[in-house]
Image (cartoon, rainbow over the protein chains, first blue to last red):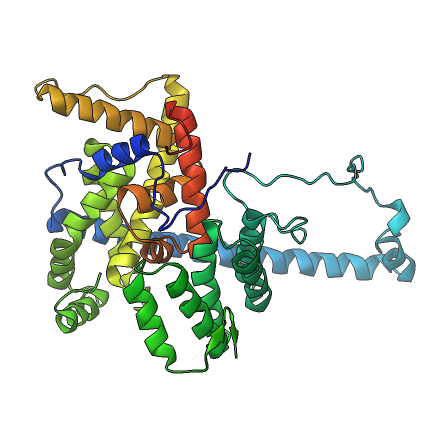
Length: 229
Length: 187
């Protein structure tokens, strides 16, 4: 189920006032007296280091043993092959089966328009471009693309969120992500425009961070929304 | 997140990376309260804090030689604490399943004033609901709503883009409202 979102001026962390009050209670919980001290931590650190050294020795030994075993097996295999006078037809027998002979797992075809939903833990659905212009799908796809080392493609999707869904609360974070991505891509003028647009849309929110980012970028041309003039 | 005496901290950090005991002790003293507060906000169970603080610092000092300073030390420790508490939540879930306890909070001391008791019960309800959230949603909600981080700090601490943190927080709120019987719309 997709969350029902509505625009908020400064996107508070929690919209529901009762839940906000509960979160505040959790934030204000009195800290318990700490019994752990530096000595205990240091003792634990030494024990962890010793355990890691032991593991290294064991793993190293296992790797050596496996390598030795592989050598022995390879030697035996070579000896047997030579004695049996194996010829080319064996190699042919061991070649991969033709594609038509291989087992293929297929499910029933999906009806047109049916999409496999992503999990609740927002695991990105990386198999395809977002079918709709749903801002959540766009943001998640952008996240996947960025993790896959495709920042330009991610920036294109975030641009769509900012342009096509300016009133969606996700557009605020998307705009900041877009600005940072454009800066990383060396598209400084566009990054500057993104930060300026953020400042215009959300005056006061994270202002000092945005001003610092703009100062790092230095002066540049005027902007028409996201585009430098 | 930036300490006032940044140069001093850098020196202490370098010494700690070499395994210097006194330097590690200084870092522990400097950050323990903050890490403890963070962990309490993450797990909501005071009895778990001591062990988790110890685990976090042992893991941190073990990994410290590989710390390259790309992030603030506080942010780095936050990430380690997030991982450790994730393990804790996993073990709590397993334990709850094993014991098949529906409202399975440990018994509490009885000598608190009534108002404290009510507050703790409300917190317990919240953390019981948080326990059922997927890790990433829970971590985003805790960072934003309980730890009070802004979007940029939460994004750095969780290693996720800002828009993703925003999405996860909203989704977590929706699920928590459903679990706690609260209306989703804030009006």
